[in-house]
Length: 511
Image 1: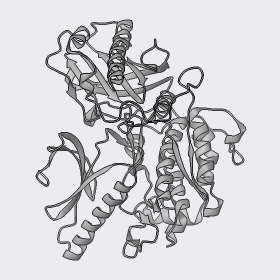
Image 2 (image 1 turned 90 degrees about the horizontal axis):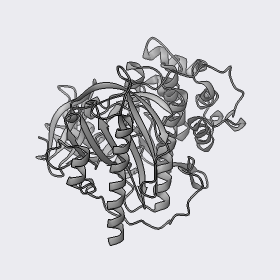
Image 3 (image 1 turned 180 degrees about the vertical axis):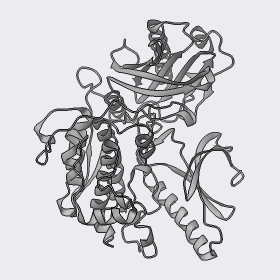
């Protein structure tokens, strides 16, 4: 137990300098991730104090940068003479783990990762913060469709002295811009170079300057051009420009965002070819397989085309990506909607209605760490989750854009892995289909399905993503025991979504 509040449950990841734990926040009754910073034994008091100050600095930086693609830090604790960072719990895997354990990402999915991380970097730069450590292990891919930038421990703040931290420069030389390896402070263009190297790794499965040792990598980054990509396809020209040795030769953030958007959405057009194109390469294989819940939850790397906040010299420009979820663009209010504070999702479906879909259900719904609710019985599960935990108090127009972006991030086909212990569903492979047109539910909606990929090929899980006023929810109905066929599962998901919409509309009417 840390600080009398955070109970460590089990390690999620371990490295040379620390570990990340799944923990329970006993005060707020939610699951969190706790980053343990392990200090070398025998460290002198001054260095120990510096390490604690560095952890506190990282927490302060992350706390001041509010962005859906920047990890949220809740707290920092000094216990057992070392720092512990309490962060939001992200279900998924780092980009590095995803690629090394599975395979390189398809080009359009890597571009979606780029859209999210570029947006996060732009927000940080607008606040005067340069990350300085963008690399595959610091990009986290969640199953809910986010690419999240983590670890601001080496970040530089405008006007802040950086003396004493230069020793950290050569932690991952394959992803450090040449000017920083030469001893310069670096700036936004350095982060852009590192993002280019990270996306290169995502599609190629190796860094742009492969070498046998860190020292050799430094030499290659400083003297050699990047290895021409073979799998990057339409993303290749942009990556080579992002990896230009001189900062002035790299594209602007606005240009990079535009190209990444076009590639992510698969839009043809000459505007994508911002430099003379290399010989087109084969697109990568299908999306990497992924596991679904708790430590078995892996991203299918279908990253939402988020609203990119790009810092420009004249201010901050906002780029909304996506297409409408239905024909036409509805005229929606820009004022805050009806739902201003988080709701208890377990109240959105009555116990009697749950019994109709899960006859063997026992007890009430159980709240999830994503702010949703799940009802389970052997072989069958129902879940309602908010698509974003930051939509409360937003406008119906913003909710519409969120739903559109979710729809754009849903691929027509792909493979993921998932498990759900509460309904006795072990690790399994699934084939996804979507986005699908569904009957009306709420103000607007779309669907997507998961089919069992190994044996029967039957549909096991159906989703309906719907909007009511300023709230967007994902309602899913899962049947893995074979008791229902595909149409019945789809009908179950849509029926549950209709119940949820009716309850929300009643709450809205009551004010």
